[in-house]
Image 1 (cartoon, rainbow, N blue to C red):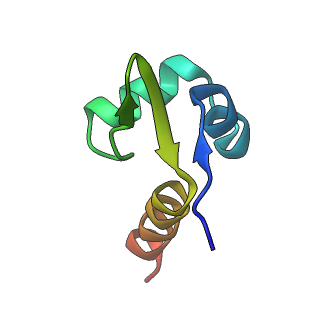
Image 2 (image 1 turned 45 degrees about the vertical axis):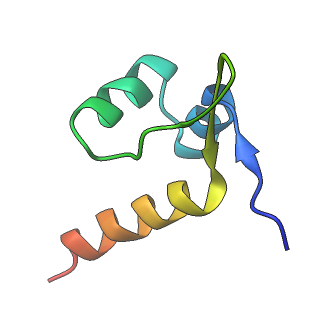
Length: 61
């Protein structure tokens, strides 16, 4: 099974944040940096979902 590579717009839509917020979260380490393919930036869907899961686990008591 392949891991889809998402664009910044797709990641923003999934997380319901702007692209600017996506890049701020990358800078502060909350979200992973993208995979570079030539001049393109793409995020493996599994890494985005893992970051969301990790954030939820940090919040849990």
